[in-house]
Length: 272
Ligand SMILES: C[S@@+](CC[C@H](N)C(=O)[O-])C[C@H]1O[C@@H](n2cnc3c(N)ncnc32)[C@H](O)[C@@H]1O
Image (cartoon, rainbow, N blue to C red):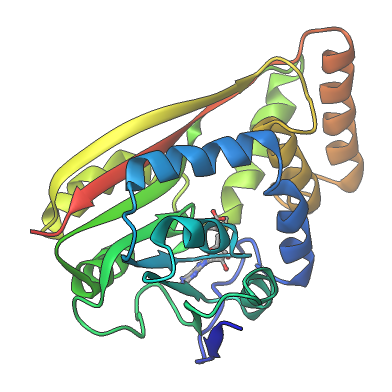
């Protein structure tokens, strides 16, 4: 069993709440093709070595922790930190048979780790939800050893290129969807923030997630599912508006006219 250390933190208001329902949705969505592809891209960029200590900030339901186990081996260790007890419960279930995994309930801006405690740290689609990104980067800098590496992955939601025959309604839906997080365009400023935070060798790669089919394994389908649960009641959208928006996307797909693309960004850097 992983060790689990709870501490108290507040949830920011208005944005997506990482509760039991969302934890269940993540269980299903994080097994889909495009999210699996995303994890593979992360592993290539992280380049974990056997025996290393790896920290996952905002570990969510623990897919990275469970899969990284095989990469660090029996002499390595993993630490997962998340502010959501429900996500940590899912991570604990996923990693139940592993002894070298520790889970902490804590905020990204206040990591319960000692200075230079880990060799590498990753944080995938987390900092876009964290109000004080500078503080979170400072914490990553503190807990990664000199010479160690960090990987941060976030989405620039303004790169969404998404076809609709009702562009006004699509704009309204995307405006409401932007309320699900604090920083809809964080990648634009992350490389500079990493350099200002003292990191060296900052490297940025953009990965396009594009599909012309609304197939259930696509990132587009994941976004549709989260949008339909989130946007009603925001920016003047009723439940009926959201249902009509989703129905149009299905009709476009049936006619072979569906199109969705967005860019997700992977940043890597070294602590000098
Ligand atoms: C989109 S999920 C990503 C989960 C995981 N990184 C992955 O890609 O599989 C975002 C996660 O960040 C966590 N989170 C959000 N704000 C946080 C904060 N301020 N401190 C720690 N975790 C946070 C959420 O609880 C959630 O589990």
